[in-house]
Length: 251
Image (cartoon, rainbow, N blue to C red; front, side):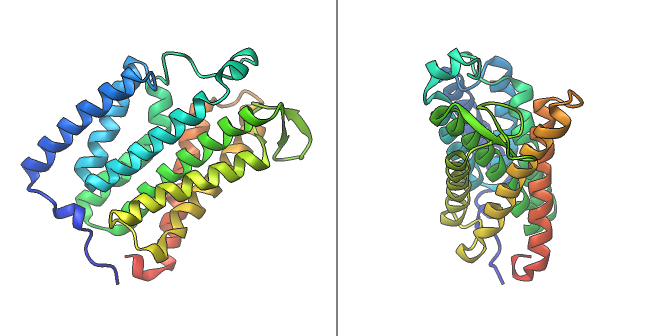
């Protein structure tokens, strides 16, 4: 059995909230200064940061910081080429809806863990963050390294950046990003190394679900990209919950 998560008891309630608020402010200012987010994105990211830190402790914040660094770097690789192809993110960074689509499920998992003490919610939160990292890095690296991708539903060649398009190199890079998120969590004591595979596998599956939704519903104009991202992180969290229940010593 896992020992109780140490981050849940790292400070009293008032101290935890005060520290979370201070860290959140600093993180939001830094993210904005680096143009990773626009003003609305900074507010949304700050809210997610506060909920993760206050609900699940410093290591949860560390996973969020790792997610930000990996997505920020991968987004800026080959920026001029992506800009010429019309694939680049806005120079001002991601807006509130883009941020919440990727972080809302993870933040909710941290809140539920804090309220219940149930470790399943913690693993679900990590899986949602792993999916966000996996999907974003896979997409950005795929666009950076080649002009073509393969549509996940038919495997036909499509231009890089096409909804539902995937690349082998991008998928490998995305998987590595998911492993990095889980590794940070394991190093911080949120997850035993033996259970590192759960958020990694759930996050990678969520990325594939993202591509399937992109190749079908999004390409038909039935849903938008933020909806796809939200449901993909939700699917990753749900899968992690199921795997955690099957792996009973996670509870």
